[in-house]
Length: 629
Image (cartoon, rainbow, N blue to C red):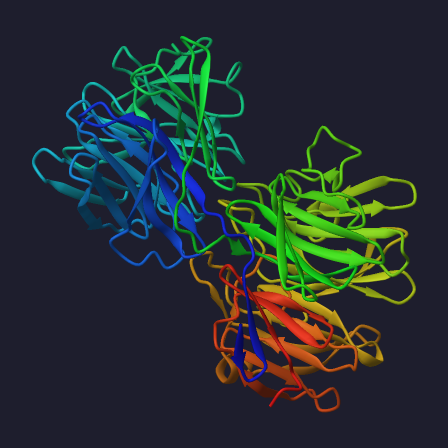
């Protein structure tokens, strides 16, 4: 669709929504239903209901603007009501009346753990501050306890449980595990693990047993041989061996639960949101039934946009995780399954390299061959997995295919709860890799941007942000020069004192490097990042230009895990993608000037292909023709 002024909307790249928790239930008439919170690029759009016998579906739009926010928790209560919590709101939907019957604002932003106590009250604990809230659907009472546990890092209270005495317990991670006990009458909250019992880089786990007690594991990754506790009021009592595994039946919980069993014994075998099919099986008879259903969708959010070999555009989408391609010649999209989220990509000759979250996966794709859904167990797949960098890299932010045609370098932030990211080197000739840890680079920092310099050198830009749920420890970010052969840093400096991140670097004419950096600490709740444009001479190690007016004059850029805001055209023109439009750089004076307003906010960049600048807004792919007036 032509939008005027050189802009074109190419449409939705991946017209699929994701599920934010799934439950198999029955209404008061006995009709079996599949319920799921439905999320697309706009956030949580609706509650989707699918008839498990006929496939007939209905969607119930969320009664407030989601604005990109979506749930992590889902709970189906004993009163046939479904709950979630996101965008600072507790939401209740009554299955019998088919209506939203309770929406209440809370202090905490995103409910991670949810449960129902023996009195039918609904409890939640939220990210990022361990805020706790309670709602009693029987009386209408609502209580917001606020943040009950303070740390200097963002907390993930993954699991929540209530004992038969009414006390509430929840897990905490990721920097250090912890159990929190809450007295619901007084609101007093007590951390139960001593400092030497807390486990770094993980979360704990709690659950309600059928015996009425709550049990906890200090490290959820050590289920069989970790330290278990009985949680009783304000104490955590050590257990020898494993705790009793008979759990109280609660439908739902945290991190997109999938409850498959209907009350009749039938169960969900599969739910395919892309193919829009539901498969229900009856274990008693061995029979299966495939049902077609439909739902409205704005499509998946586009994470990354880049030019591919063969004159196409491609990139990553989430959620669900897909890799999309677009052919400008035919105006056609297609998309494929991937096993992780495509954060960054770089192409060279006939290959494309993908950096994927989670686990910091590096993959190689040959676009001339048939795409085969990738798997860790398929070394000859297409794309194929080259390396897994967890926990040293979890979210890739920078990938460089070196001009030597042999070396691929990837950097990013570390695993959940960790601080300091590593740097991966992949040798295309030998098929071998080397992974440097942060203490072999710049301790407590992560490489966020990379550019190739002459003579086998790299220029890297770091950031102070920690892995998700981790503790920020570095005071300021730096630029560094590394020799590829020795993998040693030869020079580093906090070129801009107090800078928190060098988000993007781009090699330009005369060997100069153009970049974007920020002085603002990373805030995952804010999609608008204030950046400052600069020019750096890697030979003299001097700043040539610092545009202190970038933020005030041109506004913010959009948060993106792999920055692509600096676009260099074949004729040497350097463009900068801001939220509200496009600027360009005078390569003599380095002055930024405005080119054009965009008809939509520019959410993720960005690349040049056949005279057009491609970028994304939400689920849509757009392009701009600079020569148009």
